[in-house]
Image 1 (cartoon, rainbow, N blue to C red):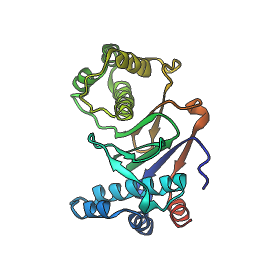
Image 2 (spheres, one colour):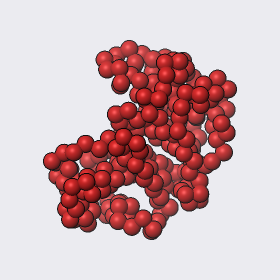
Image 3 (cartoon, helix red, strand yellow):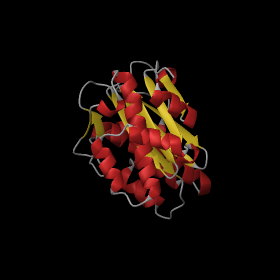
Image 4 (cartoon, rainbow, N blue to C red):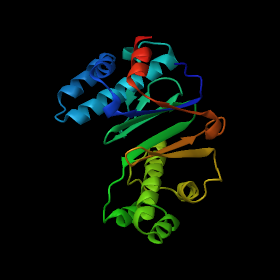
Length: 238
């Protein structure tokens, strides 16, 4: 597989990953990552971590021209993994059976994936995080329409926050609130080179991607890859 696009999105359903592919991903982790696995008590958490970090190292090694084990990844104070050299950007997220990873040549990017779960507190969550106009739109909706709109908004909100390197409860500036309003309410307007992508995945999951500083439109540059065992084997062993 050649990574010729300036923005790649990898989508992994854990249920599609066999044991040999999982072992291949495990084999490219560094010592610190392998030690973290030993402390995990839940199998799904362990598998998501192995797939996420293995995918991260495999893809970035192809971009940087080095072995997966030597990809210079560091973790910032906010918990976000970044490259310790260069300007190439990446981000990773997981929920339920999905692990998603985005990487691109841009100023910053963030990604989120969420399994749709009905909760009575969705509007309360929205009111603590979303701009007022976005909350009013959600309040005007009912049932499944409101549920899906909330998860679309939430994944884009999380992706925006992660792209900026903030925490969920960070107080945003007025300019950032305007950008969020734009992100949620008007898909056709782009300001300060901020772009976004949203997709509903099988089994009732929402995916949100936010990118800033991409040199071209996200629709022209985005390459989406569903990660299956044969692709893992070819990529890791290449």
